[in-house]
Every structure is written in C-alpha cells, then in structure tokens.
Image 1: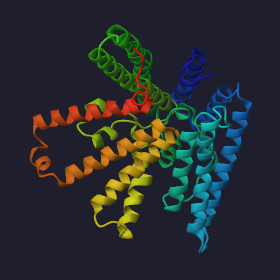
Image 2: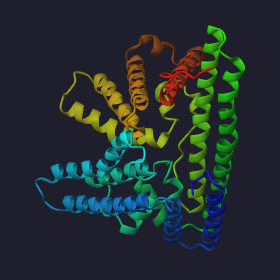
Image 3: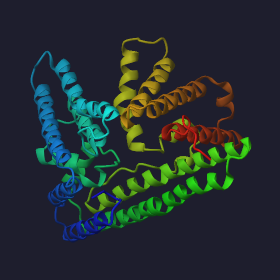
Length: 393
C-alpha cells in the first residue's frame, strides 16, 4: 500500500482521522493513538516487503541505541566524548550512505522507503543532544517521532523538540477543532495539487512536445523548453501535493507538521527560492551544515573573509543536498549547480554597488525574478536528466 497514492491508503486514513477526531473532540490525548496508528500504517506499507520491514525495525533499534549512547556520553565527564559523539554521528548516517551507494549497483539493494527522511530526524536528535538542547528523550516519543506516518515517506522533515512539544501540550476541544479544520484545508489543497495540478503538468509534458514536433531547430528547442517547463511544474505540484496532504494528516492527529512550500515561483533570487522550496530540507541543511561549517571556518580562520566561508559553505551544503537525493550524475550536478548559484548570489548581493542601489526598485525585482526562474527551471532539467539526455521529439 503506497502512501498518498492508492485508494486503500485514503480509506484507512479516513478511518484514522475519524477516530482521532472523536478523541480530540473529547479532549483525550492523541499521542498513544497516533503511535498505534503509525505502527499499523507502516506495517501495511511494508506488508509486501518483509525484508524492508525487518531492516526498518533494526534501524529503529540501532538509532535508539545510538541516541541513548550520546545522551549518556554527555551526562558523563568523559574527555573523549566529542570524538565518540562524532563516531556515533557517522554511525547514524552510515545506513543511508550504504543504501545510496548500494542502489547504484543493485536497484533492489536492501533498504526501506523513507530512510532518507528518518535519517535526517535521527541525526537532528543526536546533534541537539550534543548541543545541550535536548537532555532526555522519552523512548516512546522518540519512536513515534521516527515512525510518524503522515511524513514518513515524503516529508516534510520535522524537528523533535517541536514534535515533543505538540505531544506534551493538551489541546482543548476548540483548539483541536481549529487544527482539524486547518488540516482539512491543507489536505484538500494537497489533493488538488497532486491529482489535478500534477496530472495537467504531466499531460503537458507529453502533449506539448508532441504537438510542436522537432522538424526544425526552432521547433526542437521549443519542444525542449515546453517539456522542461512542464516538468518543473509537475515536480512542484506532485511534491507540494504530498507535503500539503502530510501537513493536513498531521494536524488531524494533533501535530503541527511544518509547511514545505511557500509560493516558490514568486522568488526574486535563488536564496529566496530555497526559503520557499522544500523548506524543511533547506532549513535543516542551513541549521546543521551551513551554519556549523561557516562558524567553524570563522573560528579557525580557514578563510580570509566571511564571504569566502559563506560561498564555500553554500557549495558544500547543496552538494550534500544532491547526494541526499541520490549518488547519480544528475543529482550531484543539481546540487553543485545550486551551490554555485547560491554562492554567486551571495557574492553579488554583498559586493555589488549596483545591487545595493537598485534592489528595491520594481524593474530590478522583475528582472531578478525572471533570471531566477530561468535558473530554477534549468536546475529542474538537471535534476530530471533532460539537460544530459534531451527528450526525443
């Protein structure tokens, strides 16, 4: 049973939401029910792949053991705790790395759907335990955080402290009804995105190039452009559709799932775009990779200027983003491309007198938006492989 793709899922989700609504309206806690519902839904998700289910169960036990190890490590006075923490962090990332490498050689390499998202969650907990932001994680809350089914397969990427706050904050009847109402709106919008917007964009990907043809060089180029534009729209409506439905399902279970898309095609520069597109991924990388790299670079004087540190940080950040999607040429170039774009944008905005003089003027914003959209849609062509293998027309 696929999440957000099959009728069986939506039927079961309706049952889950009705029971949650009864409990919420009665002002009963929802976290135990939500955990039980997540366990059932994931059992059904992996019912046709027992090896993947076993791998998931092993991963959960392994992740919990690492979390407890790091907790004890920083409660004790151990002079090697930082080095041991780094070993634990590498061990937490290792299953995802092994899986990403393995699928290059064998598409059926043992893993499980959702391993990318669950790894971000577990790594975030280890880092914040090390930083002293998390002192103790309830075993059941940690398990629920990792297996929370609305976001398990496709995100958004949640943060454990916000999740635990939702679990520990009782909701009145009116507060729950407000969340249920908001969740219904998000879910309906997501369904429209996924099943109307994405379907229309998918149709345009086929119909546009076929109608234009490739009889001349101009027609061939136009067909490629139409396909690339339609593919970018398809990515948005499909992924935003999943994300919005996950937000809606989360609200019904009393959990405020973070928003993942905020009108990305209105972005006026590439930094603005990444504040609007896959927000939970870009902000996770910002907080746990970019900020830490630039802070270390400045503390240790690795570079002569903060601008150089920021530019290199952007490239590292986005190359890791590409690796997270997959260790293929398309994804790696996509990450590198956006890293270079972000670095160039940062350098331009910090050093250009022309930018500082005109950045608030309407004509400049329109031109900046147009350039940004051209760059974004070319990035989609890299992501989907069209830039390497143009479509046949």
